[in-house]
Image (cartoon, rainbow, N blue to C red):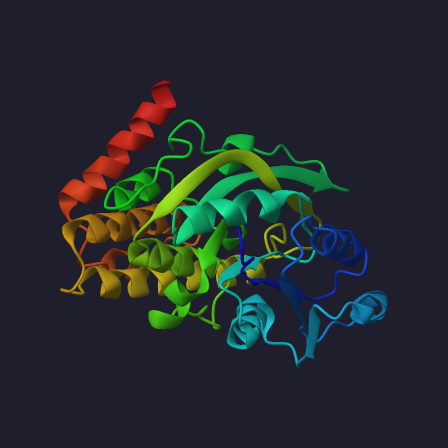
Length: 306
């Protein structure tokens, strides 16, 4: 590349004093150096801020402090400040391979891609938990180095996982379509990612493990208190309703709507299987037909007999 494009790496930070240094080291030490590293300190109550201070001598870092808005609010703040050609989200308790951007950016540039997907490697930290690594590995369904265009909707529908840190995105896709994270939710990627996928025109998959995803105690994903379970249920209900509104949008093609329907079915199925499913409002999704629901039941049956 004659002109190396600027990459905006957005790092929301909240109470990660044990992990933030490993995260930032993996970004700062990238062999690709044309970065703006946007750290959004989201009102931490531990020593995260103090751990970040020594890194601020790096002139590529933009440090923003704000009152706690949650992960969505912190990411939105970072996106609003980003100026790079491409955006990468990195959660502050995770880390990335130091060769990641040096490998991915030339592919984005040479093939004029809107998005590139890659694999993640999950690991546990201080907890006993079995991780399904296939969730972060797409090699069984996506074709490496194939340039997906109109077929990206079908490909992403068949291999849908929501975490935004598993792809590098052209910033203009987000800005031109006014895509932001909804701030009254947890599991916000479940809504954001389908919207990204229906707006891209070109995509590629790289069969490499570039992102390292940490599972730890007391994170949003592992806390299972009754209040947290209720909050999770309510968020998924809101996500389902908004996906249904997108599905009704007459401007979307049949392929785009199929991708949205796939995610809506997944959300509905999760709600139905929840211990809180007595909430009858889960049956109010008008775009889900009896055929759709029969398909879910059939899938459940096949999983049982395998």
